[in-house]
Amino acid sequence: MWQRIVQWLVCVVFSGVFILACAGTKLTHTWVDETYHGKPVSDILVIGITHKEKNRQSFEDKFVAKLKAAGVDAVSSSDVIPIPADMELKKEEILKAVNKFENDAVIITHLVGVEEKESYTPVERNQGDYFGHYGWAYGYTHEPGYYRTHTLVRLATHLYDVKTEKLIWSTESESLDPGSTNQIIDDVIEVLIQDLQKNKLLPTK
Image (cartoon, rainbow, N blue to C red; front, side, top):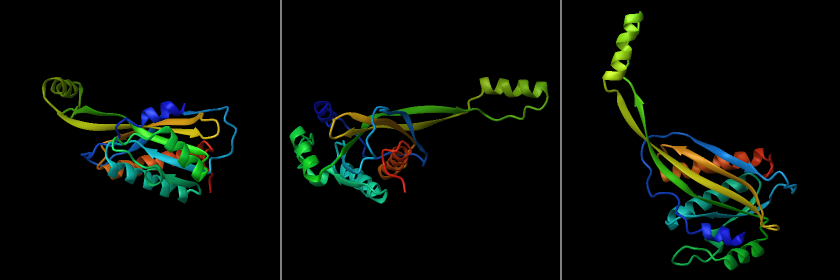
């Protein structure tokens, strides 16, 4: 299990700049291990996977701060694990940090994909009576409307129980047209914590 975790750490996450207007973030494909009967996790090692150290540090620091605000102890991997030049963490270094800080869970976030999508808005017409509708429909099929390109960023997050090394929760997030890297980080962390609380994997106040 840990070998697969370490392999994920070579993935790329968080492009340097995301453009377009502000939009929303939602979770999809959430899974919870129904056989996990442990109490809510209380101390988490946070790992963000990125090819840019600045983005990794920002993600992990903000996640740690939000977890602590939710009543959970947490540490950032970038603060407690030496980072090699290729930014691929080694299993022994992860285990050393987990043992030192007595973490009971590890959470890992990485990029799934960035997609460009187009949406079409037709030219509006007053439909009126049946011929008015015909005119509108004719215009819809014969006159150009306008296209807009949307950016969809998808991230995956996995929560592991340290004692058993089992996956106990996972989800994917979708962020539509994020305005910046900081925005997507803030939005994703917010929905992740809410879902962890909803599934009783974090304490609720």
